[in-house]
Image 1 (spheres, helix red, strand yellow):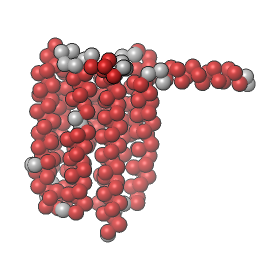
Image 2 (cartoon, rainbow, N blue to C red):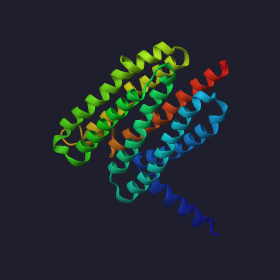
Image 3 (cartoon, rainbow, N blue to C red):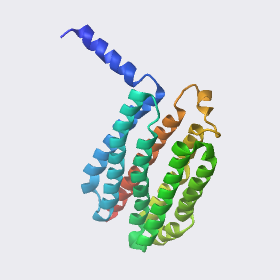
Image 4 (cartoon, helix red, strand yellow):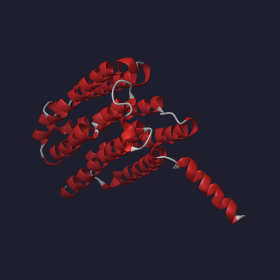
Length: 248
């Protein structure tokens, strides 16, 4: 086989897949989500039984993201457009599961199914209104963004000051620590998404990405946010599960 042809094919592949920061973050996001899923699934047997469902959910979250990133990457490379529909399908599946994690860690401290459904309902409202403003009614993006923001801050309230916080405080130990760190992901990590929303919708700051010298800024922000939040969520659960299991 001709080595020059192999190198030419490799060069063409690299130019097609890494010709911009956006395509690069799609590729890295896909690989990172796959690696995280394998790690979480394999480590389930190394933690105490009470943490295994939480770790399983973490693996499912990153696995769902991996599948969607695989298709989102191909869609972006084929069209050059942002895969908004794929992304919101991903979020509609994974964000409620992230909310379920709060129920799972507070369950033994009195967490109820009612609390879980509050979190899930708020997350679905946040996503549906966000999609409506970003994809279907950009002329009123500010209004849909407002509705989405209200649902988001309701989740923040529950985690930091409301029922989730009270249950975690009563449970103490690893549960309180887990809630604190996951709460920071909700407050700081999830705040990445409104930034991407504003940069990607007309009438907000749609051209702000050009200031930083790259196009497709919305997708770059979303890709980075997904990696930080979904993998980070799981790593917090894993670290605290290992720590708590060592005490047993």
